[in-house]
Length: 234
Image (cartoon, rainbow, N blue to C red; front, side, top):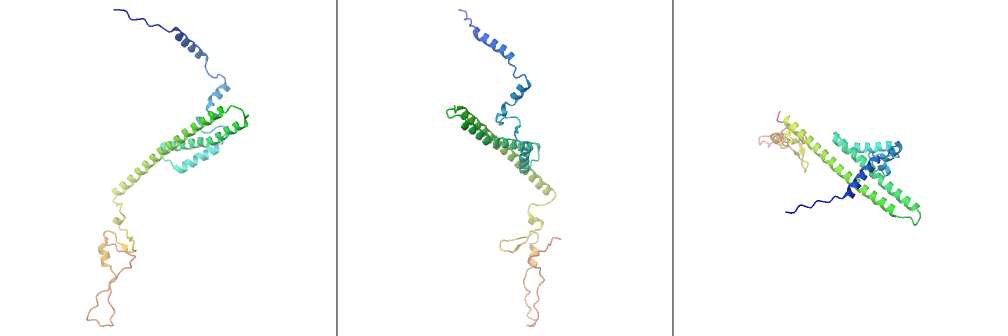
């Protein structure tokens, strides 16, 4: 039985990996305070992916007013709803910046020489379009989540209110509580439990007795006006 062949080692790849590790030890990033500041603000060139929604060049008071408008519109009542509303405000603030950045890129492109390379402008506009589409999807996704949470909260509150009324003996049908509503023809509709009372309060004259003289007053029953009802349950 023949012995298995011994695999050959690629010493060139091993040496290259060792060299890369040695070089990485010397590449420690920015060391000065100014370099670290520039590095931390690399994403602030357009601000669409920055950690803070407000750029140093933007007005903080205007942003705060922008956030208050979202809070007044959606009225969050829980920590989760407040977080989603703030995310909506931040995303919307970034989306408002996209048209301004696009106009700035086009302005710089037109100010260059006629034979300048257009590829940087095309790349910048394409990159800006990708960020705008991403922010738009994020906004609508957050809005859908907020609406579902608030709808579930309102349904739960309505169910709890109905259960509370049911436990206290209240009925969801207003007619069960003695309310009288008018029908489409204007006639009053008598609520439950008052049908017998309505029957006794009709506007009909009592039959004239044959023994009464012709000029005798006609006897009538005492009735209430049609807009009043009698509560016979007491």
